Length: 137
Image (cartoon, rainbow, N blue to C red; front, side, top):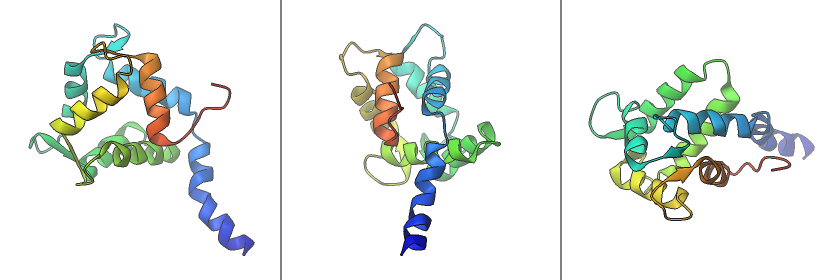
């Protein structure tokens, strides 16, 4: 029984090895293209456009995974968290992110409805989507 529980908990233990705050800040800075401290809707579209390898205006899970692996090649824990993030952002569960998903993501992250996503709003949403709560935050 103990062995079974340990095997089931290994993915969770791996996810806990990620510094979720550092990863969240890293991802925020990639979204915030003009580095003004806020993410605007256009920046969200521009960020996601870089994942769209076949230029069909949507991102497959496979395209996303390839980009994540490229940018986090030495960090499989970060890869797992970011793939989990993809699954959480794929609201209609079609294994693709597209413009309606981007709009939903932006609206959900913009908690004060000012058409900007601050770093604090982004991190709160990032933690909610990944299901990982940073200790002491």
